[in-house]
Amino acid sequence: MTAARVQLSGIVKRHGAVTALAGIDLEIQAGEFFSLLGPSGSGKTTTLRILAGLEAADAGTVHVNGEDVTLLEPGARDVAMVFQSYALYPHMTVGENIAFPLRMSGVAPQEISRSVKEAAEKVRIAHLLERKPGQLSGGQQQRCALARAIVRKPALFLLDEPLSNLDAKLRIETRVELKRLQRALNVTAVYVTHDQEEALSLSDRLAVFMDGRIVQMGTPEEVFSRPATVAVAGFLGNPPMNLLPARLDEGVAKVESFSFPVPTLKHLGTKDVVLGIRPSGVRLSQDGLPATVAMSEALGEEFYADVAVGELLVRARVKERPAERAQVRLQLDEAGLHVFDRASGLRL
Amino acid sequence: MKLRHAVLLAVAVLMMLVWTFPVLWGLLTSLKTERDVLAYPPTVIFEPTAGNYRDVLFGATSILPNLVSSVIVSGLTTVLTMLFAIPAAYALSRLDLPFKRASGFYVLATQMLPPVGLVIPYFLLLRRIGWTDTYQGLVLVYLTFALPFAIWLLVSYFEEIPREMEEAALLDRAGRWRALWHVILPQARGGIAVTLIFVFLNSWNEFLFAVVLGGNTVRTVTVAMFNFISLEQTQWARLAAAAMVGMAPVIALGLIAQRHIVKGLTVGAVKGGARR
Image (cartoon, rainbow over all chains, first blue to last red; front, side):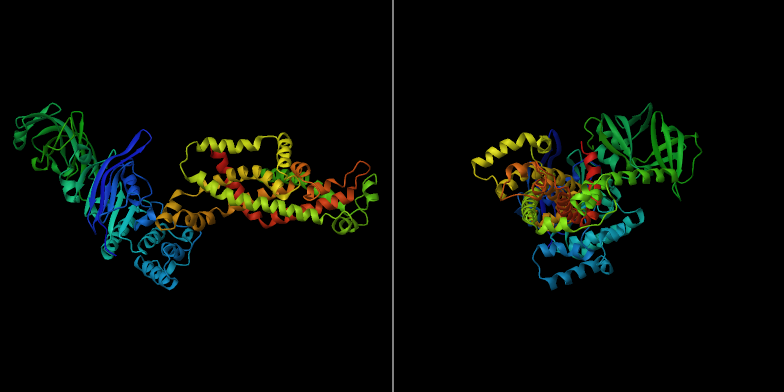
């Protein structure tokens, strides 16, 4: 089975008066691990469901390997899906669950039992085939759902927040395994998540969804290092980027009532902007913006310090823990500055 | 907590007595001779006789043909009801149809009409098409009650099953019908059993329509029992024996399906209570 190439063009979906998707254009390459990332209600799951054929788009087309599948039933699309709830059939054993897609496709019985064993071994649940889903742990259920999805060797693999019901440790383990599986099977995977860490670590490329639109698409590095809008900047990174409303005036930035020079931004002239800077780009030093330490948090080797600049709270990542209520000064690392237009929110 | 349990137990025993007393009394009566039945004060210790059962089953007034009638009518009604109600309820629970909620209400509204108001129109209708005193006539009329009831009951069971179940089945290439058959129906087993039993019992126990719309050909067991009461005399012992015989399948069915009923009823009840 060759991996599928997917193309969504102009997908619009309305639920009554609410527009869930306002024109989604997306191209996913064969064999790619592609994530749809966004906060809840941003339209990522709806996009996945339209791709699966579980929902019909009000406008737009879905192409898989160049073939228009917009009007095809889910079963005719050669896609497999892992649901957030796993949707295992509770009255069937694990083995029967995994066998189900093959049975429905009319595969011969010997072939079915061979494929079921193979799929179960790939996700290491071969010893659980006789159990019912209710007798499995969360992680085992998750593997069972994975096995049911891969057993048919689909061209396209859809995953709807598959890790969100697992505990933190298992989530990271399974994440690694998912990626390994996707590579080993050489299948195109579309992965929906609201967890930016998952998306950044798993994806070859990702699309950031906000309010029914794709606001940015690219590799994890691109999206992380050059967020296209203020909203993306605020969404990505843990903790998120500091966003400071500022006024630029010929190479001088004014934040609250304090000014500091930013010669690299001189070309922008006079403008109302939002300056973004990650906590790692904020330093406590001898000179710079006067600030008061509001709180600090231990991270292990380092600390986060929340410092107040006027009314604004800025988070800095520091080596030594500052005393609370201490008067300090902040330096912003000029190379780490992201500049966004205040009115449009777009990157400048 | 102890006291609470004791009170609950006492209430349960009391209620059980209230419900079982008529049945037990009927059982005793069915084993008495007509003379013992009329004895005053009533005798509790008497010489039991199987004579009433012999008369009722094999005598001149045998109710065996009536039992057969009842089985045909109730069986047909149940089979047809389930055949139509399952797909209908599934559709109602799953598809986004316009006026879905309103239609649910109207389905239920049919259950609120007093049957007496309908029996004459039904009689006139059936007579016009020549279906009085026929199985198809009585079954047709029973369907008008059983179907809405069964659909309404089943919808709540189907709604219990997450939609992702058949979405998964659809992606697994089952198609709608096979998704229903392989994935949804097995999970709705309890609800289907409960519905089936209710439909069967309702038509088995039905009297009014059976007595008016039936006749010599189609005379169900409830109607036949009534024949033991006449102007001159009521044959209490035989009536009781006939009642016991008529009740036997009901009780047997109840015992067989007990597990399903208890489980199914609580699911339905909670869900029913939570719905609008």
